[in-house]
Length: 159
Image (cartoon, rainbow, N blue to C red; front, side, top):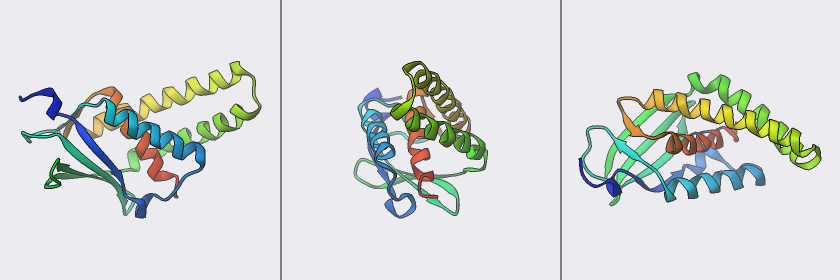
């Protein structure tokens, strides 16, 4: 199977043309997700011996494009996922995030905590859905899926 140091991402790029900038809160969350993802992840395109990998995430015709390359930049595989299964959870997630960012400024700590728990629950749900969508394509773990889901939410901030 090879060393575990190879079954990981060493670089993540978000396609600026399909993503655009978010609010300062969103940009901060995106930066943290990329940092955490690069610090610790498990990522293995099935059927490919090698790695580590570079991932470019973009949106094309409302589909999620995961362009995976090796450390030298040679193409490994590109997976295109429909975002339709994610629509409901993304919509709900953004509503909860808006409540959360508003709550940070005005609400009581217990209210903020309650909203944040809901937000984390939806985040886990999104990660779980992503794991299901990647089954048979990319082997990864819950934490890596969570962080990639954060980046998928970043793609949606533009539209």
